[in-house]
Structures are given as structure tokens and as C-alpha cells.
Image (tube, rainbow, N blue to C red; front, side):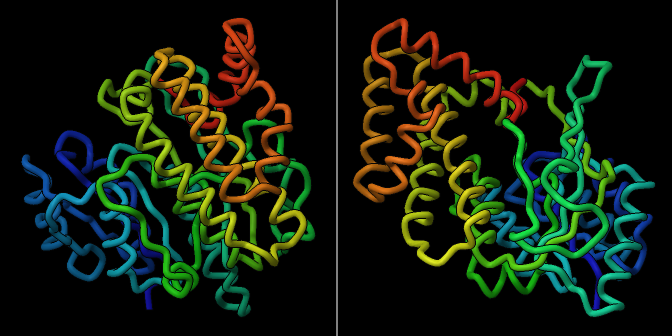
Length: 338
């Protein structure tokens, strides 16, 4: 059985996907690389097949009709046979030294029977043109080098969240909880991280900078202007997260607190994007989103609406909207806007 399955969702990725694939090959037979060609119209599929032929015991090439990033992740998970599962976007990469040390630690955990539900590492914002690279670490929130539970989680700093870049899940947990991301929708990486958290009991944090998150392409989904143009998809994802949270009734105290904090930043990002777009239609959409939260879960609405974020997102008039945009800095830290 493979130790780690890594899915690489690819859509028209011929210009940069080789770097993502090559960075995984040093893992050898411990790793299963699943390249998902999501209906690409360039040479992505051919490149995937090339690697599958060169490394048949390590690389799988899967071709499908275009279904978007979420459906590509779904396909990767369906094809995964490893004990653990991670997603690597086709324009990102792992740092080799950190990668090999993570594999060694995963092997150690398996060997002593500690197959944790969630394994967390740091990630680095590789922003084009920036010499100083921002690193997202979790030293303040998690104990290092030990298996721990939600009871052991400490305080998360503002803007400090577990993202797809930082998380490795136990594969069986993802399959057993029925995770399925919506097709043809952007920003579903938030659902990928969020929904399985209700099933996570054991965790492990390794303080290494594994994932290098590239930011700089003009067509990238975290480009601010593109996020504003796709705000309806951001709202859709946020509503799905509201629905999921409303259905939870037996969470650990710190587990619930963290998930509410995550939902809060999603509400903040959606609200800020709508405020920055500025039209009457967008401002009405912001009101409708907060009303949706209120209608779905009165308790969570009260907790989020009257938190600092919620209050600042709903101040009246132009002056209020100026204060709201101040929260943009924390949203930038979360998303890593271009």
C-alpha cells in the first residue's frame, strides 16, 4: 500500500505542471502521483501520459471531461490508494528536503499505529516579484511533534487558518465522510478543508515549510479582480459551508470555535468583495448572504454578526463600508490576493 497519494488537478497546465510532478518523484515508491487532466485543450494530457509511462508504479494519468478543480480533486480521491491524501495544484510545488522529511514522519506514525486523521505543515506564499516570502506557520496554535486532539489546540492568530496547502488528510477519513466537492465551482478548496474537520479526532503538526504556493499569474483564481468577477461562486461556497455548519450538533468546543472562525473569514471575504464591487446589486447580495446565515442558523448568525468581523461588515453608509475594507488586510492574508 502506498504511504501518500498526491492528486495534481490539471487544466491547460502544460507550461508549469512538470515542476509539480518532478518535485514529487523523489518520494519514490512510497508515493502515488495522480495527475488529473480535467478536459485540457493543450498538451496537459500528453504530458500526464508521458509521466505515467515513464513511472508506471508511481504515476497515474486520469483523463476526464472538464468538471473544474473540485471535480478533479474528487477524481483524485476516488483513485487514491495511499494511507494519506494531499492535493498539489499544478502551478505549485513541494520543497524536496521538507517533502522527504514529511514522508519519513508519516512512515514513523504508521509504524507505531498512529495513523492520524490530519497532518499539518507550513506553507510559503511564493508571490511573483517578492523577495521576502511569507510563511504560514502554526506554532502558536498546535503542539509540535506529538499526536494531539482538539483539546490540545491553542489560539489561532488573525489570518491563521488551515488551508488546502497545509493539510494532509487520512484518505479513509475523506472517503468515509462522503466528501464530494461541487463541479464547475471555484474556491471549493475551502470545502475540502472545512467539512472533514468534523470527523477529525487526532492531529499532528510538523513545523516544516512543505508547500510552495505560487501567486502571480494574471488568470489565477486568487487575483483580486477575478475574485470580484466570480463573487457569486464565492457566495455559493460560503452558503454550502453555512449549510454544513448548521447541521452540526456535537462538536468539541475548540473544534466548533475554529470552524466558526473559518466561516467568519469566508463571510468576511464575500462581504468585502461585494463592498469593493460597490454596485447596489452587490450590496444587496451582501445583505442576502447575512440573511441566509440568519435563516439557516440563528445561533451562528448572532455569534458571527456581532463579532468584530460581522459588525464591521455591516456598518451602514459609505463610512461604514470604509471601515469594512480595513478588514481586507486580514482577508488578504487568508487568500493571498495577487
